[in-house]
Image (cartoon, rainbow, N blue to C red; front, side, top):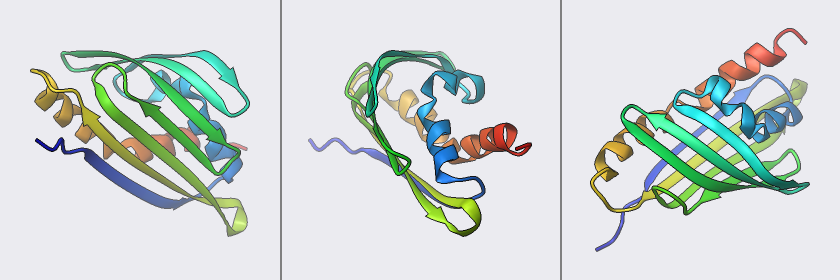
Length: 149
């Protein structure tokens, strides 16, 4: 039986520089401050190009704990992956391309394949809904952080 992955892609031309967008997305420990459902995100290990992260989400009655790796490519890409907890495979691929006037094209592609089990269907629904809002939530956070600069 073939396991179908959930996939979501979003891309926008946005104000603020790619350096600012990269810093915002790389600040994983701040996710609980603005992403609904994120209860904690803690960096366990870091170096210049990679972060090992422990994350905890609460999506309605679902309580999810997992580890992920964020690969950082200086101001151009952040690739977050996991095969822990509820995920058979999770990939969140952020890309940043400079535009005129210090703007940035920000794109995010999310691909999720969940472990089989009783919680698979409700988890697919909760994560599918959250995925569609991700770029908008980061855009709101960028406005709150950078609009006064």
